[in-house]
Length: 366
Image 1 (cartoon, rainbow, N blue to C red):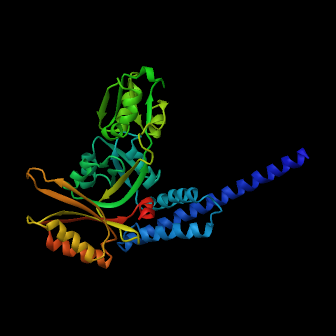
Image 2 (cartoon, rainbow, N blue to C red):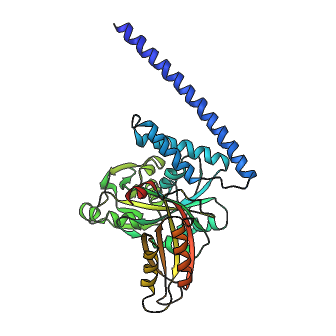
Image 3 (tube, helix red, strand yellow):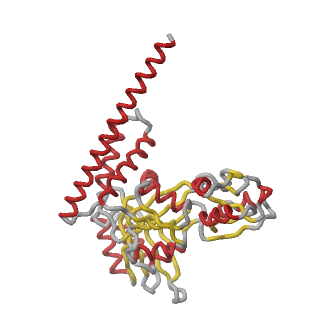
């Protein structure tokens, strides 16, 4: 009986080895096909990325799978395959708020996979500048958090740089208190980006009331500081723990569960429609009573769903503001095109920031 079981296990392992070899062979074939398609698109001067085609691939795979293989794992596997094949047509260099292991870095890997080249920058402004000057293909920047609201430094950069939004991704944020030793008693200062410090303020007040906090440019920088100083604790990502060889003091110290940050992908050109898209605008209102109501009425008349509106002061112009609008739909959709044209005529300032596929989570919620 024992020998029969061993033979069955051996046979099963040999079958798995054979299947793995077939998968590898098919992956190589898929990569070759993707490169050939990229070559043909280059000769025809067509965009390398087709969001609609990618969405259709995921829908077909999930339908054919019929939930036999775990759906989330299936999407994750094919996301890496599809992204790797797409990037083989043109290697992407992605700027993010560094150093390594920040939540921006994690969001970049979630969106682009592991095949892209990642370039850490010191500030969000630097990320925009790299894309604007063409030194990187894309940048990834946080734009809003489900608890703390808008990231104003990102919104302000859209008024300063000429870039377009190419995509978005949501990242569920879980904050870890880390340090070199793993002992809370060793921590004399807690460092992190201002947003994580705010998202953990109640926990810190309750459990570390006499320990000062230190806002820094990023969670990655805080992790670096903790790695170099045994008396500094950091609020950082799970990736930071392995990157900087830190020990976890307490996991999940955020005050509210479901804490999620939305990131935008910025580049030089927005993609074609996917069928589940957002359009972002930056507008200035006419200096007259009721001007905001007029634009909201115009969008309503075109049956346009306004997903977000945020005002920001114009630097150097006291009490003057620009508004950021997010609408559901693509500029290639007739109603969005009509609505945008009406806003162009009604506003003192109008800039189309891009139309791009909604993140999967946002599309599900809509």
